[in-house]
Image (tube, rainbow, N blue to C red):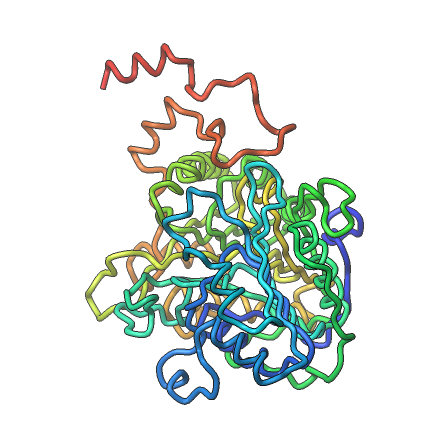
Length: 499
């Protein structure tokens, strides 16, 4: 059984932890942030792809009984007023103009002029050309850290029932769709120290003023966030993607991508994936190669994806490339003794009523053989592997039978149960076969993924989506001699004339 984690190859640092686990969906994560912030005595670091000042951290009865404000900016400012020694630093990606209509305007003024001087905010534009800052992490007093796929912003909150309708699932007074995500929490001074190094390096590169914070004090040994799925880990590793190699600034690092490829190659029994997008050419090829291999034992591969991209621009940017990857994976498994299941999920509705839209999958999680798990910000896209900044944590057990392995099994079973809308599934001998049957007959909220559709197949005969500029691969992986149009412009013209 090959060891997946390898120092200097697929992770940045390995650190001891006293507690670790995952928080599934925004209800539990936002509550955890609200409660953890009130325990901060020295500092809070918040780095993200997006923040909204009016993001609501508590809802319903919890909000009505809350001691402090429940919207993000008012809450952070109240923490400063309560503790005169507390410092809060917020680092947000200075988003591209293409997102302007989706983002809160004049956000820097809101953070800087409507709050305590000890609450500092910086927009970060120090990234690779065409890239973005996609790391999402929070550090409390250098002891408690959160990282994963969730931003503290509007349209991200939901609970694990994913009910339609849900009067609490609103942002700025308007309802939004069901939303699924995963965030890790880690109690570790070592992890806190590394993330402080990363945050400080990015803060200074973005033009922020130098700052100092007190050494970790107090204790989070009794920390137990509501709804958490604990991981019986003694150590975790942190992996990055960063063209600048922050914080060492030692050059391009793609630890998360390498970690993903190594985990796929090491899989013997099970690969379980949740990802917002799957358009990565190199990851798709690695998984297709694994499915074509004639290993001794059958491999179950479970992919939980989105039925459609969230917006039209994302459908163009990654939707076609994902359709191509799915097509190639299904061709690779055809005739092999491995099993591939690709799914999306729908929310909970009244009996006999089909949901009008699928639950949006925003998580970025990979489990291999129930002995390895990674959670973070990196999607299975080309840009997440090389261009954007990303941050993942990972744990690895010697086998699935020990304490850590059993806790990974509990996490996976909990996620599958959520997607099915059932209390539990147990451990069927052939997981994909069981999930396929339940999805096919409509016994659960799981559905078979339809891609590639006939329309997608028609487009894929003309256009190579990997040549589109929206989800670029690393320079050395790009096929510069290939045209966007398969067979050239002449083939495109013939196709259009024939249509």
